[in-house]
Structures are given as C-alpha cells and as structure tokens.
Amino acid sequence: MTQSENSYAEEYNPFQAPENPFDHAGLGGTDAESIRNEYLSHEASVKSVGALYMIGGLLFLAVSGLLMFARADVARGASGMLILLFPLIGILQLVTAFGLRGLQGWARIPTGILSALGLLSFPIGTLINGYILYLIFSAKGSMVFSDDYREIIAQTPHIKYRTSIIVKFFLLLVVLLVTFGVFMFFGI
Figure 1 (spheres, rainbow, N blue to C red):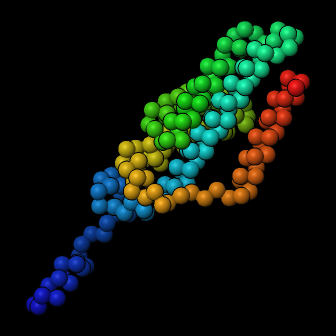
Figure 2 (cartoon, rainbow, N blue to C red):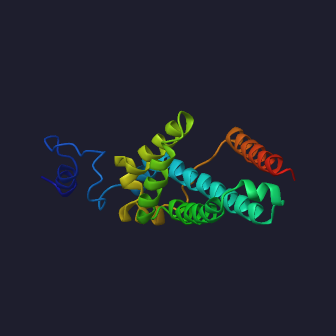
Figure 3 (tube, rainbow, N blue to C red):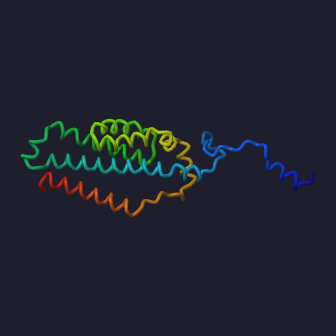
C-alpha cells in the first residue's frame, strides 16, 4: 500500500459507526456554528422574554412613581401595599430581565417564580407564562443557559438572530398602546 492509499484508508472507514449530530454532551469535537444555529431561535426567544420583563419592570416602576406623586383621589384608591409592592416587583423583573438577556443560569429561578404567578392570569396570562416556563425549563432551555453554550456564543460572535420588521413594528405598537393606557388610567 502506498502512502496516499494508506492516508485515504485512515480518513474513510465504511464500517465506522456514524456520529450522532444531536449529541452535544461533550461539545469538544462538535461544530460550534451548527450548535449555535440549532439553538439560535430558542436563545432569541429567551432574550425576548428578558425584553418583556424589562418593559414590565419599567412599567411597574413608572406606575409606582405615578402612584406616589398622583392626585390625592387616585393615590387614596391604591392601597399602601400596592405602593410598596409595585417597586419590588419592578426591580425583580428588571434584575431577572438582565439575567435572561445575558443567559445567566440563576435567572431561571426568578423567571420560574414570576411565570408561575403569571399562570394565575387566566386565559392569556396562562398561555404566555406557560410558554415562558417551557422556554426556560425545557431541554433546549437548559442548553441555552449552560456554560458550554456561553462558550459557543463566545466562539461564534458573528452569528446573530434577525428579527423581522413586522415583529419590531408590532412590539412598538404594543409598547405605545400600553403607555397610552397607563396615561389614560392616571388622567395625565
């Protein structure tokens, strides 16, 4: 056997078992780009939940600020407990949002707590928070929050998720409607 035939025999073995492309346990010999592309939409969904929590946290803080400085009749209608509870919920949501946006593993616990409470908002809140719980605690969620996946992100900074212009438009529309609703509620 010549040298070139010998190297070909080492490269190709028809009797070798095929590699499992879905086995990411070791992550040492796998292609980081293919793994990132496989989990990219799940990563983007988790980061979107972080953006929603950020908006919610800012709204809770804004409402609590408005309650403190609102007209006397509006402030009297809100119990003192709400004035204390709203800023705490707002801060918890903001901290959780930053953890979700950074794919920090610790953010799964407060997200689980907030989403479990959100399940009580039947019917739409139940659906949305059920989906959030799936995103966070599914097998893909575990992978996205793992240290190995953060290493893959560091290896593939050129891979970005592209949000469509339609989704951006509807997100802006929702933010404007919620802001308008808050202003109308307080008569500003």
